[in-house]
Length: 450
Ligand code: ZN
Image (cartoon, rainbow, N blue to C red; front, side, top):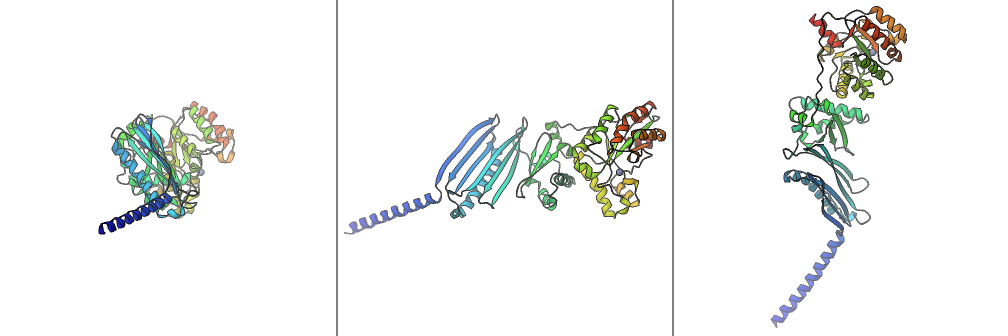
């Protein structure tokens, strides 16, 4: 009797468990039914890399993830750890909010991978993450890895840049300036950037042959900043300079004859796209090096042209940020004008201006003090071509030839077409009189040694 009772109770219990189990199963199936799944599709994309893709679609979410794998487990782990964490966070969010997702409204996570071959043993991996839960809750993130296939490791920023001492602050300044130039509307980036940049380990960056790119993710869309490597040569590690085969341009030393008839010709207020390129061509044709006192705002408007002037071997001077009469300004405004232009020039050209010319030649003791602190000698002129006034090639030539003497600094403006018109004849005439052309700094050195 007892045996039979146990038998009945046992059967009922089993039946009950089956029903409960089936119920749970059905409930699980309803909450995340897998529609399709493609796992571990591995392709060889480069002798050193494999592309791994995984896609999964359920009734609540869809993800597709592609990553690159190498033959080195440690490097793979860093990349995969990041991907897994993103995936887990995504799935956890979907799980917590599963009621709001369904077949017509799936949560989405897509991670695409891009590879950037820098050299045979330096590669960049860029993971481009797009996550969206609804119209508002969306996220775009760029994650980068720099792979060193010689050392078999993922490079840290400190493997590439020397961040000791004040270097980090200098680099922050370069990045900030570059950002301001690229996106004029993003002046609000300052403080936020400072915060992000102060923890270099958290940075997303990519080294390439010619640029070091930084990605900032804290904004709705990742912000990308390219810094030309020639602006960073003083910070780059020797090993990287060699591996990237970066040519550090050394200025050729000009041997000056102490008894030579030297003059320095200078151009103010540019660069201007309508005149400066013509002047550059003329100078090149006559093998003449000149000094260009650039206005900061012009350099910001025409960065490529400014860089071209420097690349062609001319000296770059500072002519303030917005070409104002400095003697009418407060000390702080003066600093903004002088140091602001210096910083712009440094960012665009990769070197600080070597000298300074105040607009209208107007300066006072405070201007002198600031120029001195910035290691920028104040340079005026000894011969004014009056090109801004006469706007006539022949008049310009006659005036300069009449006033010129050995050691003089001649003032021109590379914003008037008539100045460019005057130059070819003038240079031929000056050369015929035995004059040789040097930059302002060379002229100063010559005068110091004499
Ligand atoms: Zn000027």
